[in-house]
Image (cartoon, chains in turn green, yellow):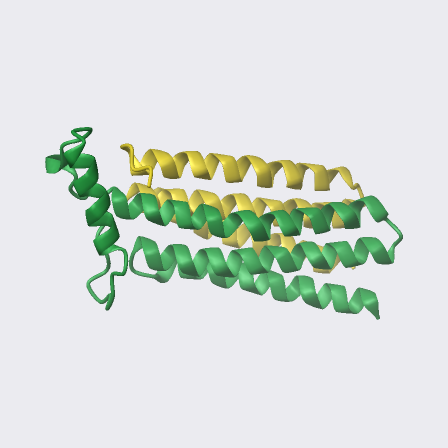
Length: 131
Length: 88
């Protein structure tokens, strides 16, 4: 019974992974791709890990189960942080949003950051166009 | 339940191929960075399925180490993308 449930959880996680990677191919710009892929693949891999943990506990293989739970918690904590950092870096390095985007909530903040950097004379922003 | 694990490995390989397509094709550097991050997470899942398939629990050590190194590397790439000293 526990084994069947764990295999179902692993299967659903695999489907989430596959759909996240299809989103990585299909969506139009960096920010859309990052949100689709990060959310789907984080949840999918966490489900795979929890399924493996359940199977390990069911077989009385304690080290495997505990390591899988640790790995799942770690991925759940770190993957959104990494995606946030990448998107922030992409915006500040000048990657444009898709034409169909309806809101740009980070624009004011990014302009403040750029202005402050320019005032302090650290950088000149003539060359910050889209790479 | 070997066919289940083989199918799981095949699905993860297909996902990895899609990520590699985005790494090769991505028009900007952040696209490639996102795809590299996702590929690292997929490899963690791959190591878990391998642990299940072979019954060797040291694959889980590889998965934990890979998650750590992938996170640090992604953060380094993100700071590199910001480029200049945007410390808010």
